[in-house]
Amino acid sequence: MREVLGKRYKFDPQDHDAIWIWDTAEFDKFLFYFFLAFNIFMGLIGSFTLAVGGIGVANIMYIVVQERVKEIGIKRSVGAKKSHIMTQFFMESFFIIALGSAIGFLIAYGIIAVLQFIPIKEFIGTPEFSGQVVAITLAVLLLIGLAAGLMPARKAASLNVVECLKT
Image 1 (tube, rainbow, N blue to C red):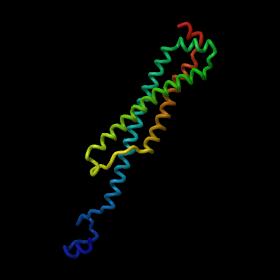
Image 2: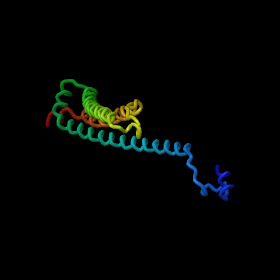
Image 3: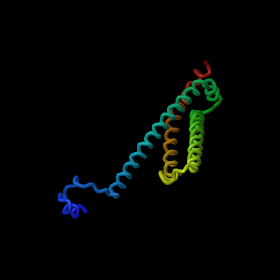
C-alpha cells in the first residue's frame, strides 16, 4: 500500500510518517494489553480493599477478645484447651468474613442482573460472573480470614487463666 501510494504521490515508501495506515491487528493487540492492564489494576484495587476489610475484622476480633476475657478464663479453668479457644475465635472471624462475602456476592449478582436490562450490550458486552474471578476472590478471602483471625485467636488462647478470672 505504501509503495503504490509512494509512487503516485512522490514519497518514500519506507517513511512510515508520510502516510498513516490503521492496522486493525495492531489496534486489537493494543486493546488486549490495555484491558489486561486494566483488569490487573482493578484486581489489585479489589485485593487492597479486601485486605483493608481484613484489618477491620482483625480489629473487631481484638475487641471481642478484650470483652470476653472473663469468659475465656472460665472456659480454660473448666478444661478448655488452647486449641478450642483458637478454633472458637477462628470460626467467629471466618463467620464475619463469610457473611460479608455472601452479602458482597449477592450485591454483585444483583448489579449484574440489573445491567442485563440496560441497552449497553452493543457497546461493552454482557456483564457476567466469571468463575475464575470468584475463585480468586474466595482464595484471597481465605487468606485474609486466616490472617485476620490468627493473631486475635492466638492472643485469646495464650491468656493467663488466673489473670482472666481476676478481671
